[in-house]
Length: 127
Image (cartoon, rainbow, N blue to C red; front, side, top):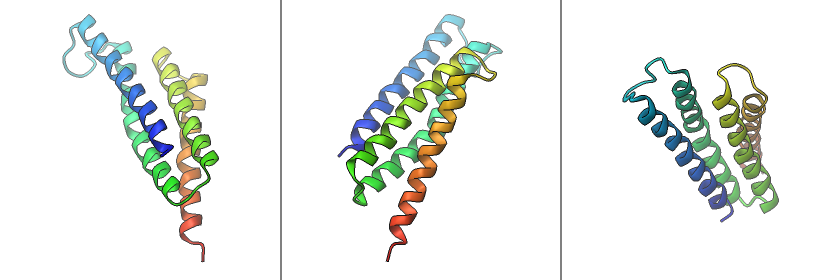
């Protein structure tokens, strides 16, 4: 099961994002919310954005794999997802404004979700 590779990589990334929040909370002694700390707010949003988009992408990837997709497509979508989420997290960690990593990370994630959605619909609607 190739999706497991990308689910595992995303799980590791999620843990790293979580640890970055915890590290900042300990350093600033902020227990809830961001307490006005801009760095903590960016870390929280990087984690939150990950949680908002990655689960549906992995579900779609899993369904596409189990619908009989060629492994090259699973690896292509999976790699694009992981690279996009790393780029997005790095970009958002540096600035709350525009950044190349955040921009391309968001675009890549939307392409994965959109592409997998269309591929699944095409398979489901085949005669």
